[in-house]
Image 1 (cartoon, rainbow, N blue to C red):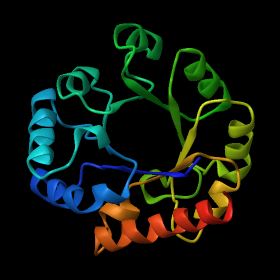
Image 2: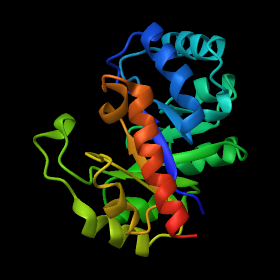
Image 3: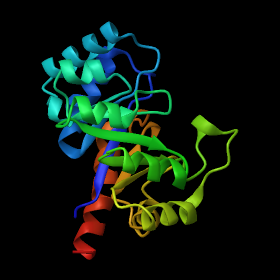
Image 4: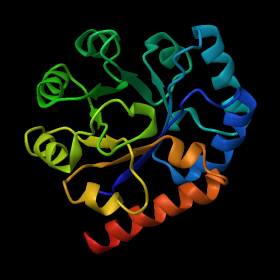
Length: 206
């Protein structure tokens, strides 16, 4: 299975900036997570409308937390956090919707798996500026999670082109990147660099 590249928004770009970046990078990514914690449902809808106008397919979009917005816009899926609706409830109501769950421990991962999650976003793996006060969970814990769950694990947190291979060697299904792409001088060049690392891995591990 080819390794996946997810990009997660961080609320630091305007709608116009995000739409422009997404237009450029979406051909290179598996999924674009819209993680805009301060936006209302209406504001999220406005962002998705702008993305769509810029040619970003809704089949690439995963909406964080807001199941209603994801369903209304027929996006690829929804990413559930600890404060979100229960995954089992979402699965029962929307059996065809892709459901991801953000997890931070083996127990959380196994619980999300039992409730019908299609994939898990796990981190933070390495030190990252967005979570400076928290110790990273590390490669060892990521490997343990992969070994003891059966759904795809997408690793997030401090992942750069130099440590992509270390992450993938754990058996993770892919990586998720925020600032490494969205805050790069050239997001397009940055996403191409990450994509090349994944392609090299895929070619060597067919």
